[in-house]
View 1 (cartoon, rainbow, N blue to C red):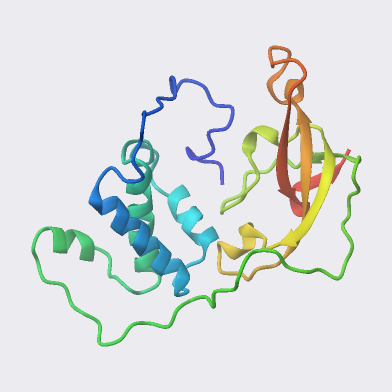
View 2: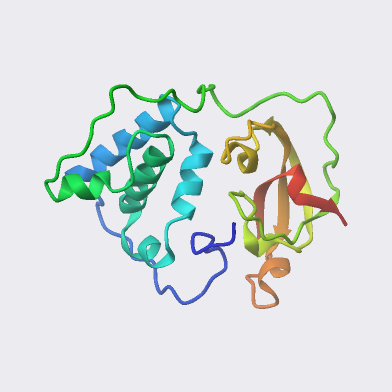
Length: 214
């Protein structure tokens, strides 16, 4: 999903400000939002990939303006509505002091939480260490962990990681669909052109369906 969240390689956002002695939370509500999101995922109302995709679906201006935990809060509200825990407009009604209907019972969770993300596969990996690969140029409509700035760029498989849950499938509720995972090394000049810092490279973990042989 190509959206404002995929900022790798983008220009124009200014200098990154580093806050000295930054606290873990800047306000008490941020602490509560963290707990809400952990509950949504921990009890199976959503999974972490669906949570990331909910953040990605935030309207661009809001995404840039509400802050880190503001995005988490908006994602939690969206996921709660999609899971049937809230009705659209419930949160605004409560903010305005209006009563909302309380369901007699909660719907069943959508997911059965499974520990970790590493899985097993019977088929061997398609690519080998040292093999040249290229991430496919795609514009997926849903969630993906493929950074836009590496698509179409040549890299080399540096390491074969254990198979893992495939986020693109898991975010849509279509099952874990485990896939082989590769750590791919990209030379900086391949990504950023001749002005890139000499002698530097970037390593990115990429799933097998993202890649094609060069």
